[in-house]
Image 1 (tube, rainbow, N blue to C red):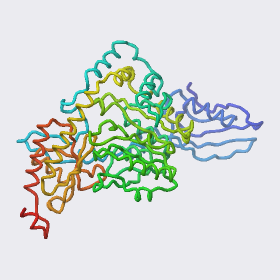
Image 2 (cartoon, rainbow, N blue to C red; image 1 turned 60 degrees about the vertical axis):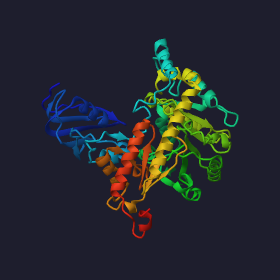
Image 3 (spheres, helix red, strand yellow; image 1 turned 135 degrees about the horizontal axis):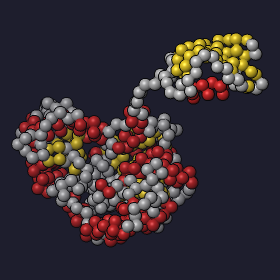
Image 4 (tube, one colour; image 1 turned 45 degrees about the horizontal axis):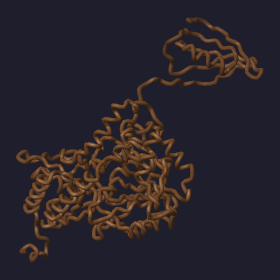
Length: 496
């Protein structure tokens, strides 16, 4: 509609009649005109043009006449349309220290030596650790059945949750399907646990050294991270006194990673009981990251944390990734252990609500779960662990013989931590520079432990083929021999 000249439109608000007069030459959108009529309920007239589509002026001079008295409302600014797209606070707070360090490495590998990556925690990279044929067949059968192509409950099929509950059930830590939440990998399981337990401004307790994702997830949610120390001289046991000193009224969760990434350590039953005693005394629930629970060498034993206490509520996170060597299939789970009903329905309901944000993990893998859990032969697990232990022993023995390095013997998982006696390598300021130069000279890539909040160490992944592990250790030895210097006052050691 095109209008020129004043046009009165009358109306009433609470019995008060009035009019609005807008003096300006402008294009007035129909919606704004209708809004003014509704808002003022009076009659208004204006000079200018009105059309269905057009641009608004930056300022309107508005006059109102109510009951015969005229007044000026003042200058009313309209929104000037412009693009203003900015990243969210959550995205700005999301920081992965591994990516930050690795992506900023400016050195290039030695072109005369094939690159050996001892940095990637993916057992499938080199092709020497395939999953079992039964696992692959279970996926093929699920796909061919045509039964698992649609949406399912966000926490997973009931039948799939029953299989996971049955697999991990034991008298000391009973489980039912209602105690299982299926997730898109163990990483999402950890994310859901943090999201259901903590609010912005509260804090969680995280191991140092520890898996960097804990901090990445927590800080993106506005959750404070407090670091408790693991002690290399005690095979990476927790400094329990220091841990307990960190707890305050805002502490809502203790993360316990056992077996450990990056340390490869496995806590003893006695040490786990001490950890549980702290949690019970301070009334702090535990997030147990037990994704490597079935990757323990023959001379050690893994104790699921929930089997040792009925007093402390525990959310145990696990999945298919490591034991079945299929990290890309993204199937994880949360096991809710709460025999004293401390979580109540609120935490369970909260986990269900949070899982609805992505509507659950891959249905094909859910459909294959029963066969994967029940039909995978024991010899497959045995062979995987035998290989990892052999490589761990080989790597530990080779690196322990190198002056300036202090490897800590692992008991499980896929990793080994190596201390660098930096006083013997004075040309390097820290572990990041040490590992960068190792890449430049020897084309061997190890992660500096600064990635795990623990400087002057580096982490070795032990899943590579044996011949590659031998070659990597040989190159590390050559590198250290070239850069090693006797510390002041230690000539006797150097003469050995």
